[in-house]
Length: 302
Length: 261
Image 1 (tube, rainbow over the protein chains, first blue to last red):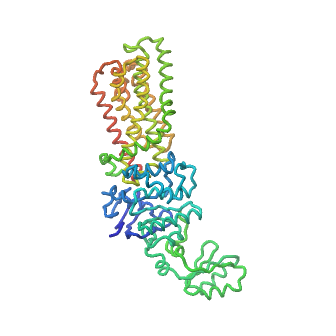
Image 2 (spheres, rainbow over the protein chains, first blue to last red):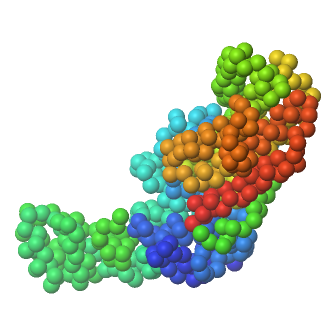
Image 3 (cartoon, rainbow over the protein chains, first blue to last red):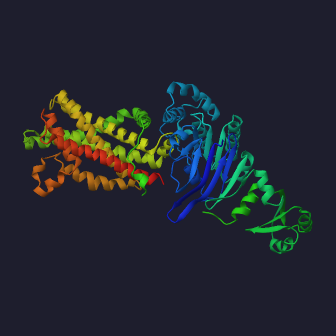
């Protein structure tokens, strides 16, 4: 049985269909990523799945409960890390955990025993008495993650868990999320960091304009949708060189002042660059980001 | 606006967790908060009660101080309920996103609003009790009569907390609240018989005053503090109860419209 199964989800705001027919299935124990540019409908999809808003059409089953009808029962076994930090600024770290546990109806004595573990998980051991406004961005995020675990949930839903964090803080969050999957928890996260999705997610779906365009494992998506090798080229005279490159690579794209050459075999491209010392280039294997940009386009989304 | 926004309130007992959250915050600030609750109405009460009272002598068959004290017990309750359900609730709803965090748990928006309603009414009760304690301490009423007035204070608190939450659901920012305070509450304070009997106004104004919740609160509290039951006791009670219940339902509809989209 799947942890989350959504079929034919639709949600419109006025004339704008934000979620336009989404099917989603998350299996127990996996880390599932929902990727997409800003405004793709990721957050709305999560809110629908949690029963926080009602879909215009479609069915949702979360942990065996029909949503939104029995969303309350379903949410009692789910942990949520929201996109915007909403720790309670009036409380200390410990109080945040204790007060949040009350919303689940968890008894205070048992929570007091669990608080040290949760603080340790957040990397805040011994900082239980700290006020929220004295914590760094990374600490707040980790505390928010620990807060989502007060009810020992089967599924943790995270909306952009590392947005706005520095690389060190991000790596620490990733390490914690891997710890959670190792413990058997199911994770559902949205992100627009391809590196994050590639490192963490067993499976992912790329969403754009309210629809899921593709889904699969990161490797399968790369293998299926993009040539395995990439050469990025930039520097003076790149435009002239690009015209020649079109005959050397399967696909040549330009974004700003950089040329991207995609091919099975990039030997010819590299050889043609050999004499062009003014051009800087980078040869790398194709990544999820290449798939993402190919499928959702290179236009700016605001 | 969707049909589901009009569903009858379906709070669970979990709303108590919201009340306790607010209580835990307030407990630390209790002393400055109580002093703040007390200072403003007391300065007004003693200033006007003794100053104006000396000139006016009696009003409505009692000393002016006792007359004013009964009015202030109701109006202080009104203001306390209003401040909590406007500014404080708005901080939790919009600025701190506390409500958003709460509805990610097995809580619903109905639970959150019920908890906030009960909490604002509790703070209002505390403000009303402060005034009643002073009034009794100065011998303008007896402790038993003051206790008898408490159910009315609770009802006034619930009515204005509900109205405040409805206004909160419409607010774009803190500035929005000054409209409500200036256009609604200040005239209501003047029209409801807090400072002088409503009978001073022309008939049409008196009739309009009788539609205001504060008028009914004052009309109930003043006789109770004098050891009497107001004429039309049940009608006054029904109007206040109506404001509380209809007001809460309205607040719920407007808040659902704002947040459940």
